[in-house]
Length: 194
Image 1 (cartoon, rainbow, N blue to C red):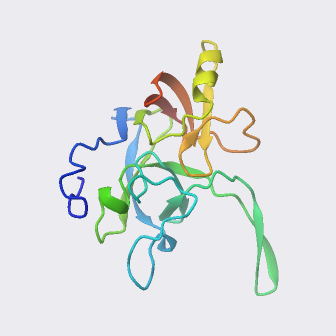
Image 2 (cartoon, rainbow, N blue to C red):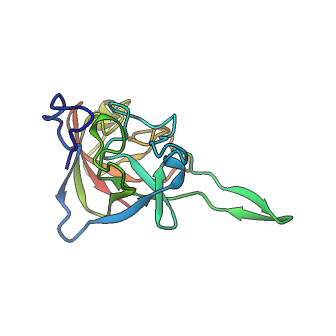
């Protein structure tokens, strides 16, 4: 439910940016908790990552999320391993894997959460979702869709702003979804892979 408190009625016609098309048995809206780093401890206000895409100062549904235990945060698009040293012992830290797609508006004028930290994250391989702009990055997607041949998927990864995007050379980035259809620059249909 969109809360109209901050924005009044000016955003009453805002559409939900992610819509499950085939999710009855394929996908689950996973109940997750926002990572503590997404809220300012002193004020309780959202402290959303600077690189994350924001609409009216908040995160949008369809943003790729990664999990740290039961807590989720925005995917940065970097799928690299790191090391950390704790108590003089250096250990390998594997890259965070995509957990699913955010189901809620978080923070800003379209906030679904209010003072809560609970969000929904759509998960489920082979589920199909429609994502409306600006819930995805359309850069290069038109050309990739036009150049694709039947049966060859167009892979989508988490961009540096957390939205799904196409990269001609994704390197070792995890494929989060495959593009099924791109009817227009404002709408795509994807086959979720996480």
